[in-house]
Image (cartoon, rainbow, N blue to C red; front, side):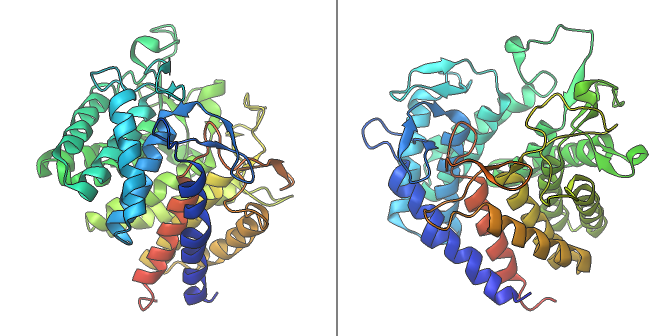
Length: 391
């Protein structure tokens, strides 16, 4: 592979295609915040606003302003979204709603912990971009609430009957691995180190299972045991692989090469496990015992799974020189650009059927927004750029 050519390809796709699409089509100039439900050509098809995606877009344009170029239109986009979130996104005590209507009236209660995590990311980066201490305080207070909710993320909105089948989920410790580094500039060093150690332990010693050959499960009992139930058998290869590049970043930050090597090894195992050997692409959900998954969309091929896998592979390749990472990167790069990129309109498709055909032509919706594709394009070109002479 010509890595210099790849660097240009990913950077151009980000700056000339994907970001202009969101800048042009997603900003609500009347009420503030962002539209995320965008059809193939950028037409808005629903005006509800989802806090995950509001926070992610604030984060994206703040992060790019901080790390790529001091472009005023990026900063303006981030600030207007941040101000909308600050005013309407929470209940006054930084309990972040799941969704709002266009004007900012709450639609769904603050049951979802990831509304909190993406708000923290958003205001942490927005503080870096603007120097506004109010944004830093929002990030700190929200992060404190996240940590207080680790044992029961949904709080009073938890539908599970208490005490019968207590499972804990991989998603929160996984995202805390990334979130800790995102707001590193706002946390005391000793506290940050403890958070990082706790996250690494959960991901690499609780959810990563030696008895499964080094695969990662989505749910375990509160005692850290496997559960032979729908949720306990659930595997999400993309989730596990995304977490591994977070772990690689932590390993690099902490100068722990053994942690990086373990993350690379796990990435390769999860790709091999999740790869559809008949049609190509990585399955969305799987059952670790090969039983029918409860998720009817289990065999779809999703945008975020594939772009996150490419990030993990390019980081793994440059951090360790593992040639298998380069080989898988080439295969998944080819699959991703062939199937997810829309060659007629900007931005990428999100949902394919098992065979790799476009299932939904939307470019954004309730779950897909200005996040995985642009973050992935940025991470990949930046990783290649920073390591051109290392291998």
